[in-house]
Length: 98
Length: 371
Image (cartoon, rainbow over all chains, first blue to last red; front, side, top):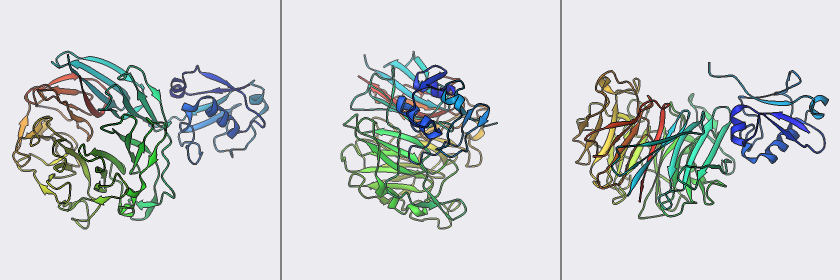
């Protein structure tokens, strides 16, 4: 299972704890994880990426294994540690606003 | 016993204030959607327990929430707002053309007759409608063909912030956009006319009486007389007696005719309310005195209503959607401020009390009169 850590407001919205577990069929890419997340929690559609363009929202960042994956192409494969569940995939609300 | 439910949207959540018809003791619930910007909460007149809320965030985008029990519980509904076809472009600050980009929902206006039908005014300016209780939203794209390429964002963004539905004619709608102007449809939204003749904006527009481009802040009508419209423009309070075909100024003796909201008394179609603000550079009441003004003559002659409102050192603003009236026999008037106060008057504005004083900045106030 893929472990995904969500920021506070998205946890409240999806009515979940800090971390959710997802099953991803096939290659574990950025887009596959986000597709699985939105399929399991439809209320999150539009909150992480644009509903129409599917682009990451400007103040959302993706981290895993100590690296920033926010600017990687959607079909980038995530590290084995995320695939095996040893490490979580983190969706982070960027610090902004001063 | 009848009562009222005041629906308050703030920068950090929604609040619901309820009282019986005396409007002296209030029950306050909230924050609902804590930490999110709630631009608007509105209820269906066809089913008062059906509420809709616009929930948004600079981080997480737009959500729409629906309640079927008067705001006790909520469920998220559809939040896909896709412009119809190729979105096209509008005028940008530097005079170039800029693509339409959805940002947020400013206003939700349920139909008078069907709780599942709701109109949504969005930024960048467009009108959407749901016919399935918010599950799906479709644009009424003809509006953006009404010289949309000339519309330009105001300081608050290019928002469609006002929607008036003619209660006597389901095909007639009025909307207002900052800073594009007012528009009318007589065919259910299939086509639109700019209705800005008589508006004059010498400080804002190179062509002071242009067809579009006027910074309309708010519109109001009385349901018994929907051809009479009142407008708070950036500067000037205006009136039209022919559904917007022609406007004339009714600012009269107001201390300043800049402001944001405007409302009509529930039982007196010629009694209107505004909250004058010093200027477009100084968004607070003149002289530090929070004064609602009413005209009982349909404009021109105005009188300050101050009893119970702070008359010194008050520097809050009242935003365009933050003034509303109930329809109890003794008409109630309500408004919220950027300082977090929600004031209520149970006697048409003669006296005021604060229902709450320390909410986050208030973005919108709506009132439901409950049976």
